[in-house]
Amino acid sequence: MDSKKLQAVEEEDFITATGSMGGHPTEWDDDRGIWVYRDTRELAPDEARPCTHCDLKQVPVAVVIPRGNSSTGKTRVAIKPVDACVADLVRRLNAGATEPVTTASCCGHGNAEGCIILADGRRLIIRKDQADRRTDILDPFD
Image 1 (cartoon, rainbow, N blue to C red):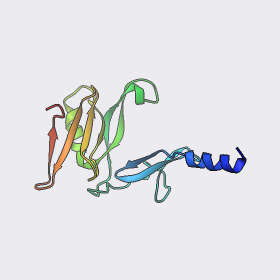
Image 2 (image 1 turned 30 degrees about the vertical axis):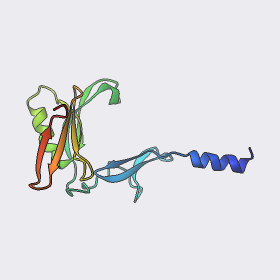
Image 3 (image 1 turned 180 degrees about the vertical axis):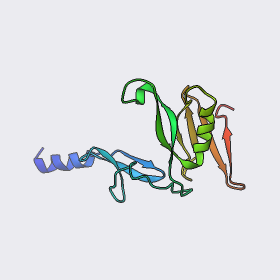
Image 4 (image 1 turned 90 degrees about the horizontal axis):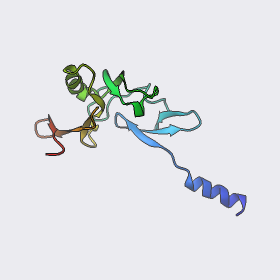
């Protein structure tokens, strides 16, 4: 295969890692080795933006970092940014425990149901009732 065809194949096979932060599209910038917002190429999450749905910024909350996701290889507690509209719920779940019981959370940013993941693997699904703007926690196994 000549070099022009090979280059085209390599470019077609190029995959960009994508995600979102607060509902804003992000992607991995391989050249800089960081996550950036797609529209401005600013560093994400250090340049935290308000949620695309509720327009609130994330707030710091103590959460459990499982050893599989921890840079130390050990389960640890760390202060991490949490979506403001679910932060109070995350704090209350952690308040009654000797160690935080939540490992991750997302409000859904108006695009999907929200979710709070507990250290034991259970997930609390958060549905926003548009009629009265009430937030309900539902048992996914119910």
